[in-house]
Image (cartoon, rainbow, N blue to C red; front, side):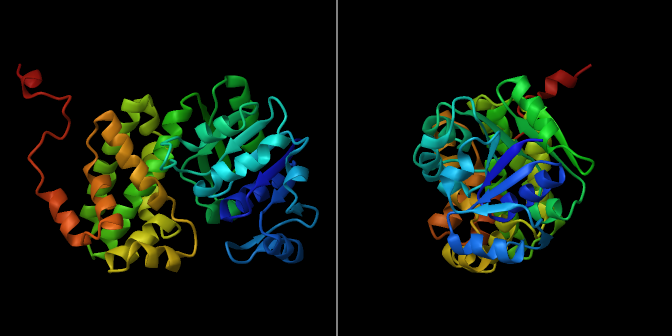
Length: 340
């Protein structure tokens, strides 16, 4: 049995807290909001963000960050991506040498262009940082529906330890050393999911959705490989798997925001309506900057940026994607290869 704190009491943090408790671990949940802690202590359910998932009476809820961090075997960092750096900065004085931090949020910091685990390593260099990602809506994990994810860590011992901590009969955990690829897949798929939602909001059909998913994973892999990620990762759970579920499900806040934008809402109006942090909005500019840095073409993500931040009409963005220059589907394949 491990002593674990979940730092962040949103839907994903709450779902993981419930899962870890069921796995037999001691679980503490921290929130910066005292009113959120009061609600969890009284209701033992996050009525706003994860209704219907009951939390046990002996789970600990606290707004005391020092108490939540010191002496714990594992810290699960589950705050929204825009707050990763500020939360890590507040945590660092309480984190011991070699203490394990598992980041479970998805995003890229706009100013630094760092992934979230890189931010944590920068702020808390004494920690041992890992990531957990994959196609895993909190609403389904909280209900105990079969789910499969990946833990990424730089050393196999940490990865296998976390695999044993999280895995059970309905939550299958794979491990991988490609931490960068895992995080890039998780962050960039949110931007493509905005595009998928916009297409839904415009009234387009399954053909459009399939095109966006297929060409979207091409863009994600193209940029991810240029940055040092591995092709196999983008073909797996944290690449195509996470992209499919985020583009197709109404659990996805990125898709829901995209639908509203496709219907004519501004980016700000859509985020307000969704009432949760829409991670893809925060990663879109960073993705575009990274593509420019690594000289990689990402036309779908470029058009998402134009719609979000430049006032471009969504239908015009789709039209521009459709009339781009004619290309080979796969530039690695040449016609003369197939001449017998």
